[in-house]
Image (tube, rainbow, N blue to C red; front, side, top):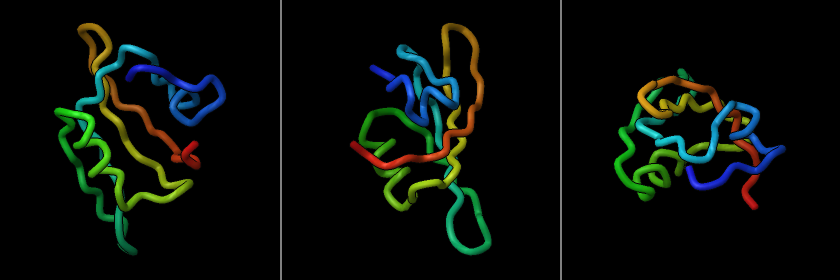
Length: 79
């Protein structure tokens, strides 16, 4: 994570600059099946979020220093 908008969804979820996104879980379809994608490069994140919509909740596993945690981000509109 390079930057976080102060009033944006990432800040509300607790993401901070310097966090490394390790994986993203996106619910999809009417049955809400969760698809988890490992994130190794920025393009992986773009692909993982490709079908997501505004107000979808996405679980994001991040590494901050030597700790790993999962936060839930409610997606907002892009800039």
